[in-house]
Amino acid sequence: MPVALSDEDFWLYSIRLAAYRDPTDTTIQLLHLRPGSSAATVEKSLRAAGATIRSAYYSRGDFIEEVRPAPHEQERAWLERAGTYLETSQGGRIGEPHHSAAEFLRGKLGPDSVYGTGLGYQIAQAFTQSVREVQQATTAPRLVAIEVAEEPTAFASLPFVNRIGPLDREVDRLPQVSGADEAATFATMQRIERDIWLLNGGNGNRQGTLP
Image 1 (tube, rainbow, N blue to C red):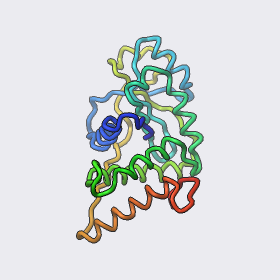
Image 2: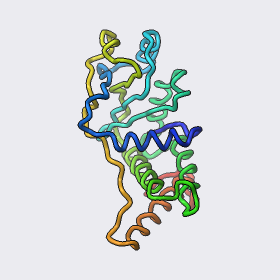
Image 3: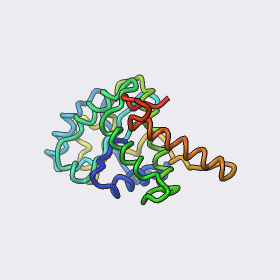
């Protein structure tokens, strides 16, 4: 989930919120798009109709990727750029947002750091899992749904809107850092730290990929 890193609290909050969203919660209604809808057309039309786009959902074959920008990024066009980024990250090529996130997390996982706690490691674990899914994606990203800040039914008549409803899948849960004992938990944390180190270019890993 590429998000802005300029506001650490929002970034951490957005990941935490996505991870703990109840999959049976149908209060978050999305605009489901007709196949082949153009991101540029969708965004232009929604903005002209007075909508604020909170997040976009892209199908990437076996999983759905959520892109949720920071509030200040919602004020300017971003949908097409997000799709371009997801496409260029295909086939193991991760881009600047992932590298920036890895750099950010690497500085937060020490025992004396602000987020060097179970929360920090859980977020790092969820992040590396997401990176692996992106690296393994074989299907070009396809924009399938949009979340708007306003009442979605107000935009139901737009030609690219297929229907309104919740996301058609169970939302992934945030992996927990756990183990049979303290040693197992520590080993899990070491693995996460190594993954972040590799993504940050460690061991001469210029591509910033995971094994």
